[in-house]
Image (tube, rainbow over all chains, first blue to last red):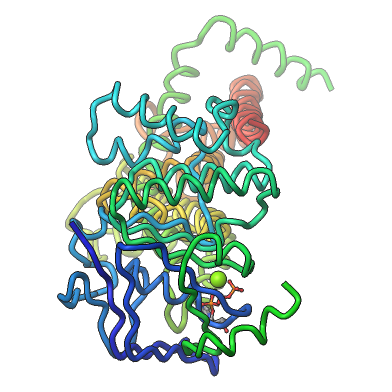
Amino acid sequence: MISSIRLKNIRKRYKGTPFCLKIDNLEFHNRHIHVIVGPNGSGKSTILNLIAFLDKSESGHVLVDGHPVFNNKHDVDHEIRKKIGYVRQNRYLFDMSVFHNVALGLKIRKQPKNEITAKVDNILTELAIEHLRNRSVKSLSNGEYQKVAIAQVLVLMPEIILIDEPDTNIDILSTPSIERTIKKIQKERNSVVVMTTHSLKQARRMSPEIISIQEGRVIDSNDEKLFFEND
Amino acid sequence: MIYIIDGFKKALTIIFSLDREFLNIIMVSVSISFTSTILSVFLAIPFGIWLATARFRGRQIIVTILNTLMSVPTVVIGLFLYSVLSRQGPLGSLGILFTPAAMIVGQCILAFPIIAATVTGGVSNLGNRPYIAARLLGASPMRSTFLFLREAKLIVITSALAGFGRVFSEIGISMMLGGNIRFYTRNITSTIALETSRGEFGLGIALGIVLLIVAFLINAIVYSFRRA
Ligand SMILES: Nc1ncnc2c1ncn2[C@@H]1O[C@H](COP(=O)(O)OP(=O)(O)OP(=O)(O)O)[C@@H](O)[C@H]1O
Ligand SMILES: [Mg+2]
């Protein structure tokens, strides 16, 4: 059971851009949900990509339960990969029905068929999208697509849950069911959850402490007010 | 004018009597072009996917070369392979000149840039997102590749059909490398050329109709896939 992820002395640049992520020490644990806020281009998605081992930093380590994970980019321990659920900002669903998309991760984990059906139907109900069950993802609206992408990850109840901007395209009436489901799974499963948002209100609802980043650095939470004066 | 009408009459007789030579020629064309397309698909699709997703210096140059090769004249491929495969050539000892094998090699080369360029174009739009999405869901590299190909199936099918359409209707390679040997390497296009030069239009017109039907079918299939 994974209980913490720590970024240690991380330096991450992108070729041809002045951006540099600098994080000396940042820990995410499973006692509550962690929310990262910050302006566009501040490095939120970059942090999630590093935790998901989708990308590699020039220096520093990602430690899972205190142990550095060797990241050869495509060669991270398959077992760790399977414990991570990541809803990317750049979401992608497969050209199948909603049901089969949400069932895909469970199928990959070779779960029995009847369990898969039960779990998928359960998560679709929790996110109030059971009516989309047999639709092709090509026909979904942006908000519906987003909800299915979240369902696809949450149905796995992963030990590490990363969600980049769960609120994108989501109407105010649907937000509570998504927030409730994330919280519930975090509690039930004791997952390490890291999410990002542009809404300070959502951040406050989800987490007792908010991580603010700006230009690739974690900033003092007192300064954070500066960015959200109008929220 | 009479000879044209005569030719059409003969053509219809050949088609509806299922003339043995007529069917044999079609079989030669279909089997050779089908084989060369399949071989080319297995080489060109991985290459096209690699070219679309890899990031390295000189990638754009390779894409440009590939696009140029799409319109390489068949006689140039014929000339090149002839010199390589002829008795004095470096691969002369294989002894495959004027056999279906030589035609297959030539058509394979002809189809390769067409299939690879179509795949590269299509996959560039798709990007590596399906592959990454699959890996993130816990799929192995192998399974992720399959899921990726599943997403790219339309691209794969249309590129293969484009390749087949090209090799099925080419003549330079068939003539120069096949040698137009009856019941062996004589295919639709080389027969049409031969019969026409002899002033015999019946068989030529019959085979021309087959070419048109195949071209129509390929377009119809591609169109129906695009719409679905
Ligand atoms: N693949 C990439 N190549 C080059 N630069 C990149 C790449 N990905 C991100 N960047 C740059 O790195 C910086 C941080 O990007 P990141 O996506 O982490 O920001 P973000 O905080 O998630 O922003 P947003 O709120 O818009 O999602 C930006 O300046 C961006 O332009
Ligand atoms: Mg982002």
